[in-house]
Length: 226
Image (cartoon, rainbow, N blue to C red; front, side, top):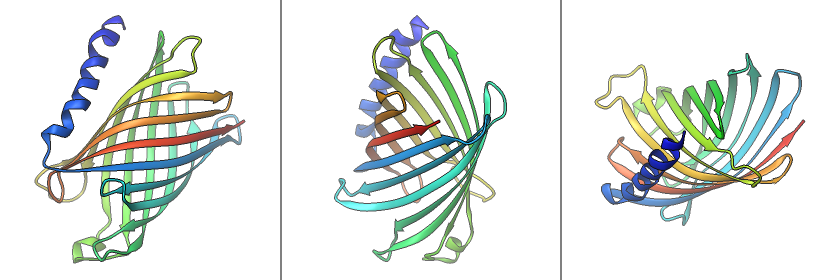
């Protein structure tokens, strides 16, 4: 664990700083969000989230969505989740149109000293209501793999973390199977027992429809009910 703190984390942060200089098309966006969760039974938890996303150097709204779902604690280290997202997205006709997303997650997590390690395997389907071509009528399927490491700071309400996520296209012939990467580093600030704020920097590299990079700053307020 000492080696992780001394070598892995600084290397990852350096990678994040260097990545924006390596790309071609570049952009910057801000994401603002609020999320809440509530335990309804011993192993079940309801989750609700809303988020507003911007692009074009944070000057225009790219997407706004409302997402809800349920998570089931299968065992100590594994949980399952089902979620649905209703979104309005800025499309090629310069207007906003509805998109529907469904998610199925398998999550796992464990503690090693002051380090919390977690992983998420996500299967998602997206349906558009705006069709620029015939291919837009076909649902989009992706598999997503996300890994996260968070350092629990003793006697201090701020916990730093890093994460990485890949987006894998499914069920369609494509030139590049992994069409998106996200690298993130941030902090969780605990305001009170059931309230916290997440602030994170994300570098996102897209390979489709063309190579592009976007730097993102996200701020999310989290509230947990018992």
